[in-house]
Amino acid sequence: VEVTERLTRRGVVRKYKQIARELGESSRRFEAVFDDPHTLVGILSPDGTVVDVNETSLRYVQLRRDNILGRPFWKTPWWPERMRAEIREYTRRAASGEYVEYNADLIDAQDRTYSIEGTIRPVEDRDGVITAMIASAWDVTERTWRTGQSQETSAQLEASFEHSPDMVVTHDAKGNHLRAHPRFFKETGHRRTDHADMKVFEIAQARDAEAAIDLWWEI
Image (cartoon, rainbow, N blue to C red; front, top):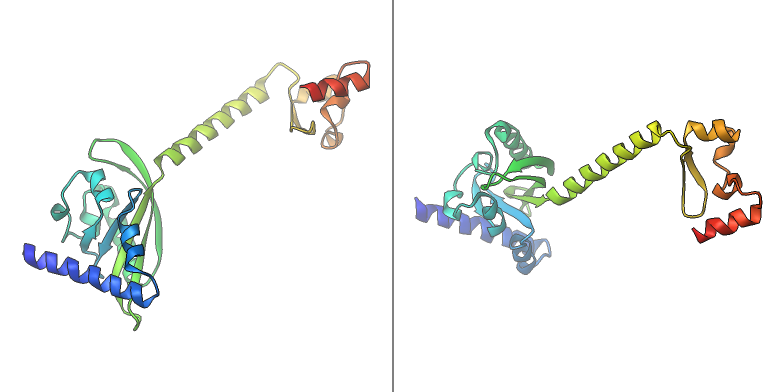
């Protein structure tokens, strides 16, 4: 069985490299993508069986390659039970010729949560027959975390703005008003319709308008 799996794996990889050459792509390019330390890559047969995976993907499950090969892609350790039907459907769609994109939040072998963006794309020969599929994924955990932090910070700033007892005004680097707290209009007598065309130094409380402008540019 082990010998058969190795021969099958080599056959699919060799077939993919042949297709790559026919498409004008070099085998070096394929190997560079397959060995990319930042990309999880797997080669699947048309029925979804895992034929090969790269070292990067193995690090997430901390298993040897021979523990993965020969399994249906949706039954590999990367996917929790709750996602297997979904991944099986993605695999079926790719096998029918569709370029499939997906996102997932997963847990690695050390119980750490990570987020990925992935694709499953079919590989066709010159006759249009699908001979393999390439499953690729990128770890976007840090980017997802930063986005969440940014959204949380924005929500906090929004709450501070809305509930501030002070006359808060936001503006850009050139002094153009962007937004003002309701108290601003109440205290200054300015109308909301005039707000977009105003400069911050135009509502400065200084008696000397030129001094107000000078102060703004110093700030």
